[in-house]
Length: 256
Figure 1 (cartoon, rainbow, N blue to C red):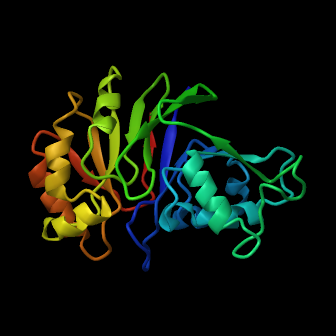
Figure 2: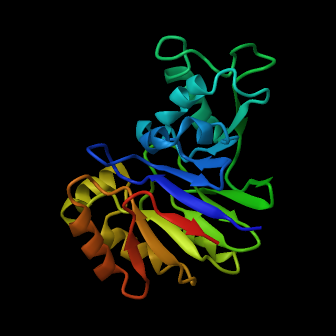
């Protein structure tokens, strides 16, 4: 069984040709639901059956209420949204609250909703069509997680939004191999102070952390502050001399 990951959104903000975090795995599974989700053709959106959220921040969830609306009435079975309880609570309280948006977890009826929220805890693993996805705790300003996705062909990790931590690297070290790591570096080293306050990586912090893993995955960087892409990328390359470091620009397709 082959596995494919398509990068719909990768940026740390919006602007012409910039889309926020959303990764499509095969045709049925999303990691985060940022603005990049909106570029999928409607007939491809209908394939999405599972969404795994890293945290509750707007740039990672803004596509979810709009997707629920676009897909309303299309399926008999709800779209499953997997996330920590704190993330689900935040989304239900602040988005699906009948003021900002209708609650599609109760529409058309509570028994047959359009979306279904499923609580997942760090350490939990969910198996879907010969792929297993594990939730990993990370370190952000709201409860945040990363994910490790494994199939028979490959193991791929997503950091989610995080700064300095041990948990991500400890969990990844339990796997036999990590082929690919999508990891954020939101700011340049000039903004190290902002990185620490907002709990994001900058290149120096990421460089200090990534040596905690004994794996040598291909590293693909995400979540750059718009306008500073080249600087952040070059600083990351310098900070991680033992790794192959690449910069996401959107639309990339990884096949395993």
